Image (cartoon, rainbow, N blue to C red; front, top):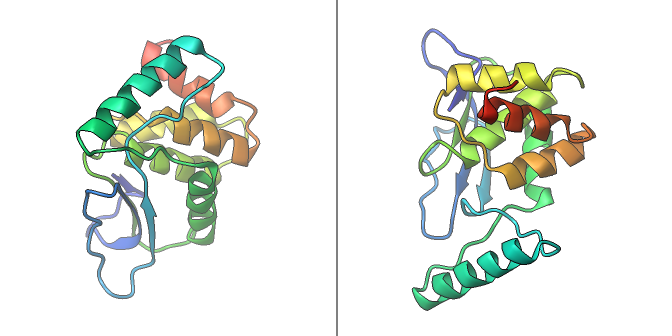
Length: 168
């Protein structure tokens, strides 16, 4: 997941996201890197009884097979946004990396784009993300947290939901 396309493919900074059983990407010396550890898992809305039951069943199953998952936290979104802002003037591409390159990394890339733009440009950020990565399915928990940290009042989440529904 590259942001800010460059001719030579030079990497200016890296956000590497991996779970406990996944490997982080190796980054060349001198390239700024933000390493985060969480799984491709949504946080649970415990006020929704169906979602809570589903989460309980999935957690029980994951524990039984020895593969518990850790969803992202608001601190992860905050770290991504701070990293993006502190590296907004990089020369080269911002690389956002996760295991499959579809959910966690695309959510991180979206938060970077939102951090680099003003409020009101959420749809443009989502359009840019999809233009770079048409298969993007951003991890909504991370998007919600980023929306909150950026003070976008649900507009970033709404832009993703509308894009998925083809109404945005």
